[in-house]
Structure formats: structure tokens, C-alpha cells
Amino acid sequence: MSDQITQGDIALEPVEAIPKGTVEVPPTERGIVLAYGEATGAAHVMTPGKTVQWDVAGQRYVTVTEPDTIRHDSPTGGHGESTVIPPGTYAVRQAHEFTDEDEFQRIAD
Image (cartoon, rainbow, N blue to C red; front, side):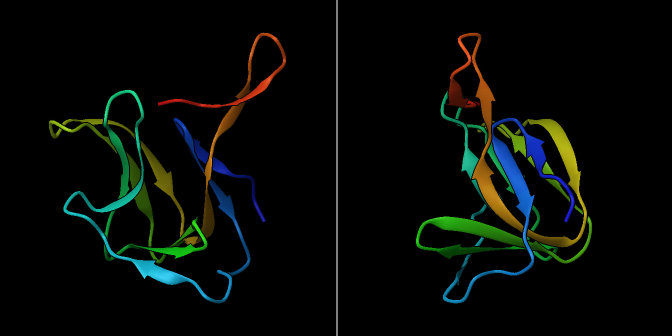
């Protein structure tokens, strides 16, 4: 499988299949929300009909059936960066980075 795809504090890690026991997560009025920004209230959003989100024990997954984008939407309706996601199955992860002190920390969006 290829490497993970990141946008801000979200990482999509390709997986072979979604685990058994997953439950579909319905879209919100904003779309398929992968995460809300802690600092700004912005959201990482994908398109219903192109992407389906799943949950099992708090771990989120997405199935992308046709090329889609992760849009960085603000609470006021504006759009920031977009990242194109090819069809596939992905685990939704929190992106991490190393600090200047060589400590591993979550990326805050």
C-alpha cells in the first residue's frame, strides 16, 4: 500500500479492508467531517456520495469510491486548502510531528 496522505492535523492511512463491526457514520450538514479544528472550529470535510465514513470503537475509517477532496472548511463557510484523495480504504488518524526538542506531538489545526 502507498504512504499516508495528510492535510493539516489529519492523516489518511491506506488499509486493506475495514474491520468487522464497523458502523456507518452519517454525514453532517457540512458533509463527511473527519475532524474539527481545535483552534478555529474549521473542519476537514469530504463529499457524501464519494466517501463513506465508518467507526469501530472510536477508530474512524473512510471508503472513497471515486476521487474526492478533503476540504478545510471554516465555520463561516470559507474554504482553505484542499487535498485530492484517490479511491481506496483509509484509516483516519491524527497527524503527528516532532518538536524542536525531538518530542512526538499531535499537530493542532
